[in-house]
Amino acid sequence: MHAPLPPAETLRTALAGLLDGLPPRQAAQAVERLIASYRGATPTDAPILRDRADVVAYAAYRMPATFEAVSAALGAFADAVPGWVPGEHVDVGGGTGAATWAVSATWDGVRPVTVLDWAEPALALGREIAAANPALRDTRWQRSRIGAALTIESTDLVTVSYVLNELTAPDCTALVDAAADAAQAVVIIEPGTPDGYARVIEARDRLIGAGFHIAAPCPHSAACPIAPGTDWCHFSARVSRSSLHRQVKGGSLAYEDEKFSYVAATRFRPTPAPSRVVRKPQIRKGQVLLDLCETEPLLRRTTVTKRHGDLYKAARDADWGDAWPP
Ligand SMILES: C[S@@+](CC[C@H](N)C(=O)[O-])C[C@H]1O[C@@H](n2cnc3c(N)ncnc32)[C@H](O)[C@@H]1O
Image (cartoon, rainbow, N blue to C red; front, side, top):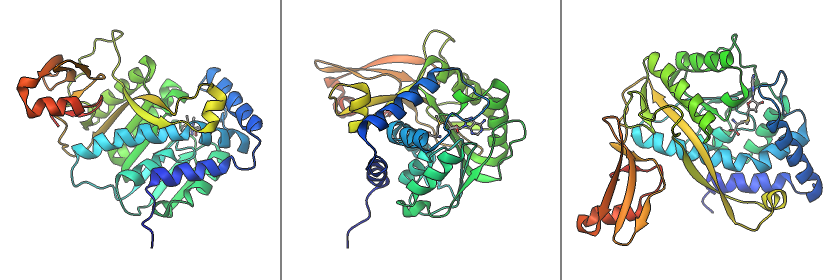
């Protein structure tokens, strides 16, 4: 008997299958339409993902990247809550279910999952893709509008991935408050842009106000040390490019890097990293420069040289987003 494939590979195969039989030009056109809608004004009064062509385009083009970003955020979060495993999961604005796949890739086992979204075609395709993942067999795909009336049933983990960006400010607040009321842990992921970071920081402040502790990426639950407008905390996840990506974006690179900002917070006390690498490490001859966010809380550059022995070896392997020391 073969061991089951890891969720990332199963997802890649399931998404590649979506494009089977779809003429490449048609798939590329659907993606271009989708990119144009996202460039237009958001939030919108009605779902952007209106029909199957839209959601196939979203799933094939964006879901591999949102899956990798959420997986990276959950990996850092899981390190800060050793031994904790979510019994139940609610994914709000879950669309085609990228975060449900990322949760199943982070923690083994089958758990009851609820995906909430207002776009029925996204939920339908999410259910179809999830049939390939045995860990998602207990998943409800439920139509729900995020707004003042949103309630989330009590659960262990709420994920909100690439959604705040599509909401009005009052709806963002309503969503973060509903998540804080419902869950033991809340993980929010946004694009790694100055605006995405600003939305994450607002959500972070609200979660702390509601009594939560920050588990990742920050080593502390004090205010973010970045002076507003001077920089933005974000990370990077590597995503394999499909032939569809190459067709839409041109070029022949085998991968691209998805930039994301995130916060993971818990009602219970986590064990956050002592400090975190917040930029791509710079490797020089005989030394590595690490930009760290520490517990003071402050931002500091440290230089690790050959004289540091094992620590130097670790620094050469350290990646943007890693806990430091490892
Ligand atoms: C960019 S997609 C992200 C989907 C998924 N979470 C992911 O990471 O791939 C944003 C999702 O939010 C949903 N959404 C946006 N506004 C919403 C609202 N007011 N109520 C419910 N869902 C909403 C959209 O339908 C879409 O599925």
